[in-house]
Each structure stands twice: as structure tokens, then as C-alpha cells.
Image (cartoon, rainbow, N blue to C red; front, side, top):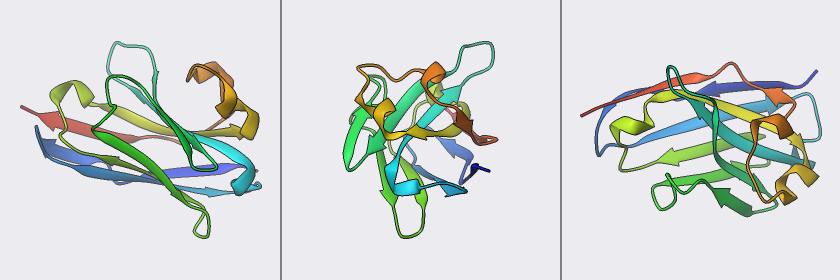
Length: 125
């Protein structure tokens, strides 16, 4: 059973920083494509970033402000979020699937089978 558990969300003022974590278990973590998605109220879930074997991909809206990384020994995925804006307010989800998903030219929700329960990020202006 694949399990993904996010943590680290909270409330922060615009310009501030947060680091999200996602603890993974139940599968071969080092061969998985790992991603972060977010969903704001009334909006569709959108891709934020993904990582596999050190190769990263970012959505344009977060490039230069967010950094995705992973600690394979701890089976943990991270999302460092700096210079946060009110538009970043959303529920953030960790997702995973086979490594080949990270070879796609897009970061799409439909490509990932395994999801965490989400952690809320609220940015006030």
C-alpha cells in the first residue's frame, strides 16, 4: 500500500517562506516520479513541480521561488516555497507514480496514481 503523508503547511504573510514535506512508504521510492500539486478553492488542481533522479520541472508560476528536493534515505519529498504570494494559497498535495511519468513534457494530475491527503497553505497579503 502506497502511502504519502504531507506536512508543513500553515499561514504566512506574503513574502514569507514555508517548507512542505511528504513522507512516502509502501513502494520503491527511489524509482518513483514525485510531484507537488495544489488546488485553490473553486479552481482545478494544478501541477507545481516534480522530480526524478535529480531532474526537476517547475510550473512557470513558481519557477525561481519554489524548490523541490528529496532525501532518498528518509524517503521524504520537500517543497521549499520562498517569496510566497497570495495566489499561492491552496491545498498542496504530494503525488507519486512510476519514474517514466517524469519524462512527460507536462505535469498533469492524470499521470499520477498515488496521492497524499494534502496540507493547507494560506498566504495573506
